[in-house]
Length: 361
Image (tube, rainbow, N blue to C red; front, side):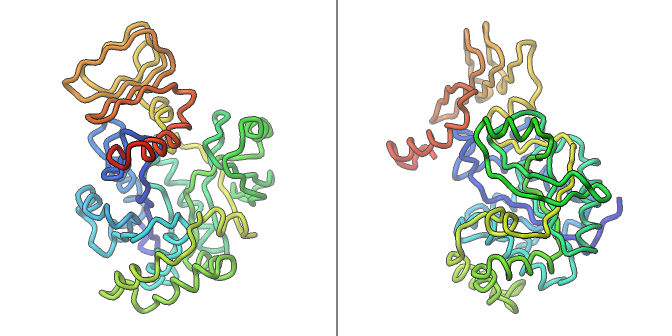
């Protein structure tokens, strides 16, 4: 596969991974951790996944300003200009618009891939082939393209994309987006065969996405457009710290994708998982004969099945008579929670913050 110097990648790496608490913390979120036990962080794996698509010099990391040093440690190949440190967490629409303006200052005719930093892709070559297909379409059409994942189960943790059933060269027009439906609705979506999971992986030309912001989210466009001439210069950081926090806090799905009429999707299967929760980690990791994922060198699981137990090496952990549980042992926090109720962990983290302050976050 030939690298394209007109393709840029923006990797979103600013989240705190609240559904992965207490493993993922404010000071070191999950994207900087070796969650899979392969010796590389999720961010490092994501970065390497895109190297056959474009040069390392064309890969930009969008993160919280507090994580700049963590990014440098994981990706020493990058220059300071390739690490965009947000001074505030304003969701995905402002950071994507900011990055698009920044890249347009380097090459206004370029194409842009946006991808999260914490996803798993088991079939990387198939993934890259879909990206090449999307890039070809986006470079010759005024189109906003998203990779849609064919659902493998009913899941309420994902957004869903309804797509038209008459694809052109494997690329389908998007009818609508639905954010995280209830279980009954999700069951209907999956049964119909008309919906895909929204993986949050986008492909478009810089012209198309900036045009979309200008027409559909003019406030963000106006605020960040003031920085033309300052992006990629020593003045950029001061501009960002002054103006970025004033942008609306909104996702790109709500700001752009749900409003735009030129949205397309490519139905895809490449062994994808967003690795958003402990149960998704359990699903992706090797298991023992009883379906347990045991992360630690001294774990004794007796009459226990379909559970995830994560503990520090050198610490003996004994569990008995547990089915479908999550056990995460950190130096200052022990979590024992039913796997079927894992979506509650984000709220539990909030309760911990209210009761005990931020010391355990």
